[in-house]
Image (cartoon, rainbow, N blue to C red; front, top):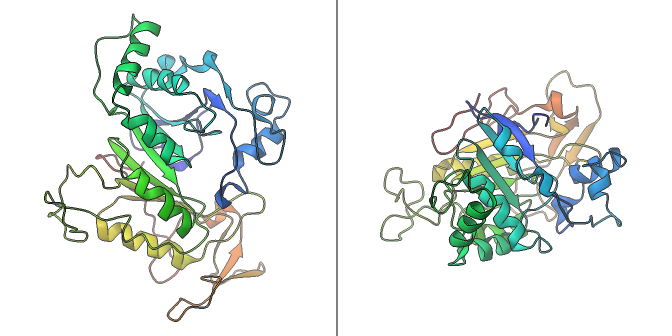
Length: 336
């Protein structure tokens, strides 16, 4: 399998990799409009494992398929990998049976040297799966029965090498999904704010609490490190690819500021196809309003220029576009 080009899959000491034992998905919100997996399915429609397995019969739906022949791939990786689980699907899609998920988690449990990251737009199903009282036992049984030669006894729960996250793109879906994510049993809970398509107030979603349940967000050192309702990581990014929608810089800076205030590590992945205009730009500018409605106190429209993902990069600054990067990880990991 080829290494992944997804930037946040490369903490120091790990090789980034995508692992797709399940393929196929359904579009559920505006962030899905320019899905890169759909683009891949069209580009490689005659290649087994790509379009041949998840080319959508309609613009919004692709068949959900389980590829058991891919389950054991992690056993063959000798060096530590940081793995995006189901990068071209959703592990917690409503058409994915729980037994498939249990098989995948059994493989994850039996490969503790690798770090696995799962992302869903269906956190309510992720919560239902993870909070079921018998789930730990079922995953253990699956590991013991399917790979008895690799099973060395019960493993910790939730799995220490599995990070669970949800994607949000605007205020509506942040308010809908992030409160559910905060209830999910996981060693690391993370938010993927990509593509960021509008302003989001993260105040209530990034709250930190002390041992008495009091809100102590911003008071470093006072929150309870064992707080099981906090978010542990946030990835921000603009949209890239065909039809990409520009991201207003103030949307980004507002999110970064809220995360910093709450002590949540942030990984800024990319501006996307467009970045703030700088001196010397010759390409046509794009004006991006802060919001659809003109509200008192809103930042002014932003002038962006479409230069492509690679040139746009991931440089940020509170007063404009400057080459400062912000690529942080939780759990003591650092960026390469």
